Amino acid sequence: MYVWPCAVVLAQYLWFHRRSLPGKAILEIGAGVSLPGILAAKCGAEVILSDSSELPHCLEVCRQSCQMNNLPHLQVVGLTWGHISWDLLALPPQDIILASDVFFEPEDFEDILATIYFLMHKNPKVQLWSTYQVRSADWSLEALLYKWDMKCVHIPLESFDADKEDIAESTLPGRHTVEMLVISFAKDSL
Figure 1 (cartoon, rainbow, N blue to C red):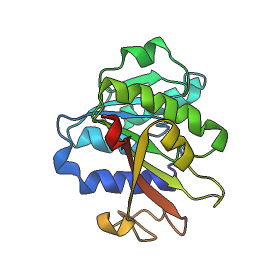
Figure 2 (figure 1 turned 120 degrees about the horizontal axis):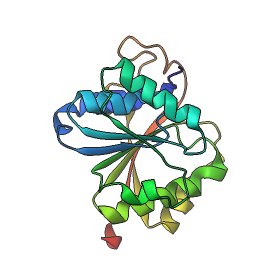
Figure 3 (figure 1 turned 30 degrees about the vertical axis):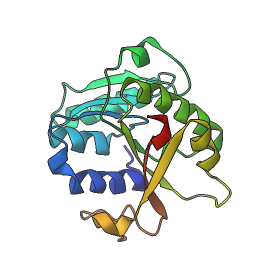
Figure 4 (figure 1 turned 90 degrees about the vertical axis):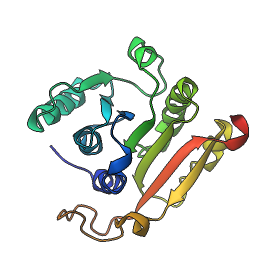
Protein backbone atom coordinates (compact mmCIF):
# COMPACT_ATOMS: atom_id res chain seq x y z
CA MET A 1 0.00 0.00 0.00
CA TYR A 2 1.28 3.42 -0.92
CA VAL A 3 0.27 6.66 0.78
CA TRP A 4 0.52 9.67 -1.51
CA PRO A 5 2.11 12.87 -0.16
CA CYS A 6 -1.19 14.73 -0.54
CA ALA A 7 -2.91 12.28 1.79
CA VAL A 8 -0.47 13.14 4.57
CA VAL A 9 -1.14 16.87 4.11
CA LEU A 10 -4.93 16.36 4.09
CA ALA A 11 -4.63 14.16 7.19
CA GLN A 12 -2.69 16.97 8.86
CA TYR A 13 -5.54 19.38 8.01
CA LEU A 14 -8.04 16.95 9.52
CA TRP A 15 -5.90 16.55 12.62
CA PHE A 16 -5.69 20.31 12.98
CA HIS A 17 -9.53 20.42 12.87
CA ARG A 18 -10.10 17.17 14.79
CA ARG A 19 -12.31 18.77 17.45
CA SER A 20 -14.87 19.69 14.79
CA LEU A 21 -15.08 16.17 13.31
CA PRO A 22 -17.11 14.09 15.81
CA GLY A 23 -20.52 13.32 14.35
CA LYS A 24 -19.74 14.83 10.94
CA ALA A 25 -20.79 12.87 7.86
CA ILE A 26 -17.67 12.53 5.73
CA LEU A 27 -17.13 10.89 2.36
CA GLU A 28 -13.64 10.29 1.04
CA ILE A 29 -13.49 9.99 -2.75
CA GLY A 30 -10.60 8.32 -4.54
CA ALA A 31 -9.68 7.01 -1.12
CA GLY A 32 -7.13 4.32 -1.96
CA VAL A 33 -5.29 3.63 1.31
CA SER A 34 -7.76 6.04 2.94
CA LEU A 35 -5.43 7.82 5.36
CA PRO A 36 -7.61 10.98 5.62
CA GLY A 37 -10.85 9.01 5.96
CA ILE A 38 -9.37 6.61 8.51
CA LEU A 39 -8.11 9.54 10.58
CA ALA A 40 -11.51 11.27 10.38
CA ALA A 41 -13.19 8.07 11.59
CA LYS A 42 -10.69 7.75 14.45
CA CYS A 43 -11.59 11.35 15.38
CA GLY A 44 -15.29 10.46 15.64
CA ALA A 45 -16.67 11.27 12.18
CA GLU A 46 -19.18 9.04 10.40
CA VAL A 47 -17.06 8.11 7.38
CA ILE A 48 -17.80 6.45 4.07
CA LEU A 49 -14.81 5.55 1.89
CA SER A 50 -15.05 5.35 -1.87
CA ASP A 51 -12.92 4.61 -4.86
CA SER A 52 -13.67 3.74 -8.46
CA SER A 53 -16.29 1.07 -9.00
CA GLU A 54 -14.28 0.16 -12.10
CA LEU A 55 -11.19 -0.67 -10.00
CA PRO A 56 -12.15 -3.43 -7.53
CA HIS A 57 -8.56 -3.71 -6.29
CA CYS A 58 -8.77 -0.07 -5.09
CA LEU A 59 -11.93 -0.87 -3.15
CA GLU A 60 -10.16 -3.86 -1.64
CA VAL A 61 -7.28 -1.60 -0.55
CA CYS A 62 -9.85 0.60 1.24
CA ARG A 63 -11.26 -2.46 3.02
CA GLN A 64 -7.79 -3.69 3.99
CA SER A 65 -6.95 -0.28 5.41
CA CYS A 66 -10.15 -0.38 7.48
CA GLN A 67 -9.23 -3.82 8.82
CA MET A 68 -5.65 -2.79 9.61
CA ASN A 69 -6.94 0.22 11.55
CA ASN A 70 -9.61 -1.68 13.50
CA LEU A 71 -12.44 0.03 11.62
CA PRO A 72 -14.13 -2.92 9.88
CA HIS A 73 -17.53 -1.20 10.17
CA LEU A 74 -16.64 1.62 7.76
CA GLN A 75 -18.69 1.51 4.59
CA VAL A 76 -16.73 1.24 1.34
CA VAL A 77 -18.57 2.07 -1.88
CA GLY A 78 -17.61 2.09 -5.52
CA LEU A 79 -18.13 5.48 -7.15
CA THR A 80 -16.94 6.32 -10.61
CA TRP A 81 -16.58 10.04 -11.16
CA GLY A 82 -19.06 11.46 -13.63
CA HIS A 83 -21.39 8.44 -13.44
CA ILE A 84 -24.68 8.45 -11.61
CA SER A 85 -24.90 5.05 -9.95
CA TRP A 86 -27.18 3.50 -7.36
CA ASP A 87 -24.37 3.78 -4.82
CA LEU A 88 -24.05 7.50 -5.51
CA LEU A 89 -27.81 8.01 -5.33
CA ALA A 90 -27.98 6.09 -2.04
CA LEU A 91 -25.35 8.21 -0.27
CA PRO A 92 -26.72 10.29 2.58
CA PRO A 93 -25.99 14.03 2.64
CA GLN A 94 -22.41 14.73 3.65
CA ASP A 95 -20.89 17.54 5.69
CA ILE A 96 -17.39 17.16 4.25
CA ILE A 97 -16.01 15.42 1.19
CA LEU A 98 -12.33 14.52 1.32
CA ALA A 99 -10.17 14.21 -1.77
CA SER A 100 -6.42 13.82 -1.70
CA ASP A 101 -4.71 14.05 -5.06
CA VAL A 102 -7.79 13.26 -7.13
CA PHE A 103 -7.01 16.21 -9.40
CA PHE A 104 -4.28 14.15 -11.03
CA GLU A 105 -5.37 13.78 -14.65
CA PRO A 106 -6.91 16.88 -16.27
CA GLU A 107 -9.33 14.75 -18.30
CA ASP A 108 -10.91 13.65 -14.98
CA PHE A 109 -11.35 17.13 -13.48
CA GLU A 110 -14.83 17.75 -14.86
CA ASP A 111 -16.10 14.28 -13.94
CA ILE A 112 -14.86 14.82 -10.38
CA LEU A 113 -16.57 18.21 -10.14
CA ALA A 114 -19.78 16.83 -11.67
CA THR A 115 -19.85 14.17 -8.95
CA ILE A 116 -19.14 16.78 -6.26
CA TYR A 117 -21.88 19.01 -7.71
CA PHE A 118 -24.38 16.16 -7.40
CA LEU A 119 -23.35 15.60 -3.78
CA MET A 120 -23.55 19.33 -3.04
CA HIS A 121 -27.19 19.31 -4.06
CA LYS A 122 -27.89 16.83 -1.25
CA ASN A 123 -26.38 19.32 1.20
CA PRO A 124 -25.59 22.76 -0.26
CA LYS A 125 -23.36 23.55 2.73
CA VAL A 126 -21.03 20.59 2.13
CA GLN A 127 -17.37 21.41 1.58
CA LEU A 128 -14.78 19.55 -0.45
CA TRP A 129 -11.48 19.49 1.43
CA SER A 130 -8.89 18.66 -1.18
CA THR A 131 -5.15 18.48 -1.50
CA TYR A 132 -3.36 18.13 -4.78
CA GLN A 133 0.20 18.01 -5.98
CA VAL A 134 1.13 20.72 -8.45
CA ARG A 135 2.25 18.91 -11.56
CA SER A 136 1.81 21.58 -14.23
CA ALA A 137 1.28 25.33 -14.18
CA ASP A 138 -1.00 24.84 -17.19
CA TRP A 139 -3.63 22.88 -15.23
CA SER A 140 -6.36 24.92 -13.60
CA LEU A 141 -9.72 24.26 -12.00
CA GLU A 142 -10.85 27.87 -12.20
CA ALA A 143 -12.97 27.66 -15.36
CA LEU A 144 -14.54 24.37 -14.27
CA LEU A 145 -15.36 25.71 -10.82
CA TYR A 146 -17.08 28.66 -12.46
CA LYS A 147 -18.96 26.34 -14.83
CA TRP A 148 -20.19 24.19 -11.92
CA ASP A 149 -21.08 27.22 -9.78
CA MET A 150 -18.42 26.54 -7.17
CA LYS A 151 -15.81 28.60 -5.42
CA CYS A 152 -12.46 27.70 -4.01
CA VAL A 153 -10.47 28.96 -1.06
CA HIS A 154 -6.76 28.25 -0.98
CA ILE A 155 -5.63 27.24 2.52
CA PRO A 156 -2.00 28.12 3.24
CA LEU A 157 -0.13 25.04 4.47
CA GLU A 158 1.52 27.01 7.26
CA SER A 159 -1.94 27.70 8.74
CA PHE A 160 -2.13 24.04 9.82
CA ASP A 161 1.56 23.23 10.25
CA ALA A 162 1.86 21.39 6.93
CA ASP A 163 4.54 23.57 5.37
CA LYS A 164 7.36 21.20 6.27
CA GLU A 165 9.16 18.44 4.43
CA ASP A 166 8.03 16.01 7.10
CA ILE A 167 4.69 15.90 8.88
CA ALA A 168 3.89 13.69 11.85
CA GLU A 169 7.18 11.86 11.38
CA SER A 170 6.38 11.15 7.72
CA THR A 171 8.79 12.37 5.08
CA LEU A 172 6.20 11.83 2.36
CA PRO A 173 5.40 15.48 1.71
CA GLY A 174 9.10 15.97 1.06
CA ARG A 175 9.76 18.60 -1.55
CA HIS A 176 6.51 18.03 -3.43
CA THR A 177 4.46 21.16 -4.01
CA VAL A 178 1.13 20.34 -2.39
CA GLU A 179 -1.82 22.72 -2.25
CA MET A 180 -4.84 22.64 0.06
CA LEU A 181 -8.23 23.81 -1.20
CA VAL A 182 -11.71 24.09 0.26
CA ILE A 183 -14.33 24.02 -2.48
CA SER A 184 -18.00 24.85 -1.96
CA PHE A 185 -20.95 26.26 -3.85
CA ALA A 186 -20.42 29.82 -4.99
CA LYS A 187 -22.06 32.27 -2.60
CA ASP A 188 -24.68 33.49 -5.05
CA SER A 189 -25.88 29.96 -5.83
CA LEU A 190 -27.16 29.24 -2.32
